[in-house]
Image 1: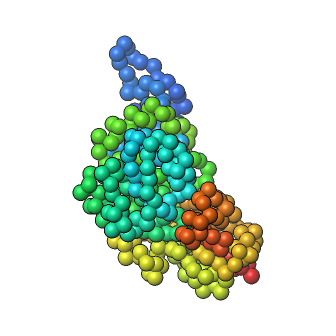
Image 2: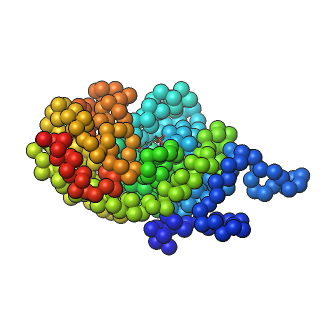
Image 3: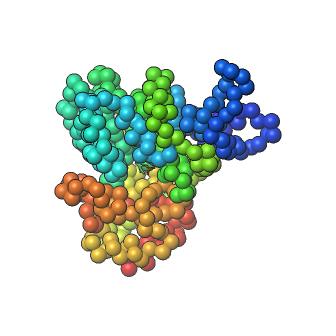
Length: 377
Ligand SMILES: *Cc1c(COP(=O)(O)O)cnc(C)c1O
């Protein structure tokens, strides 16, 4: 089945005497047993709830995984994932990750005895150089946030397999609609479901999708024990969001390439970072490993004043954190998503007072041009 169809029909509703087309919200924390030693398959909602289960089956299908777990947030998924590791373990990560992941690793995970090397994972030889006997995972985000670096997922997984290291890919930016890391050899896919999967800036969620029953068993145990499971209503909102993932991703990506090209023609815009531009240094890798380029654009403007003017003058476009929803949002990474990264490290990556990030929505693209044009005047 094509993914456009899978977004809507990936999992049939089971036990459906009414013929409901939309999966019911099972707002139940606990489930009665038919007899001693018997179970309906549901016992207590921290372990499983039918609405969440439906969502998890959809996500597993979309990512071609063995199992998917739905979390309250993307960070809850990442935190749970870190419990897979033990004191003394070493993890290699991209140096341009979502800011919250850096904060988790540097301030929380280190207390549990994990060590990290944050490096440019686009450089496979650099990854190889950092592999140590205690390296247990390579954690990549591709494209990265906000600088849009791309890592060759297949090459990383080939290297990791030689060393028996897990490969974890944060697939939030492209979603399974455009990129399927497990098919490229990754072991675990991570998502902030808050973004494109939910798609409406109204619900927080996160996912882990795994490629083996062994990883599923280990993570399910941690999941039921630590308890960051997605609530039934939020699970339902994600199911509904995913039904329109295909049309949203297509429209957002088609708007994004037009906006990226338009921004390049503007005198106050100095550099545009979008993986769909042929001049992007990682364009070829993107074409090879993804079926689309997504809708995230970063750009440098000519001065801090221009950046501030743009953020304050846009009308239709909103100045807000987050991404992936139907509304176009503009973010100031330096003050928002990446405020907790030490200044020197942040500026070395190009995240400075002139960098802005756009999450392109599904509005009519001419209305977006008009809004940007009046704000740039
Ligand atoms: C937002 C985001 C996260 C964190 O997800 P939350 O749902 O906000 O906890 C992780 N990775 C990426 C790439 C994100 O954009």
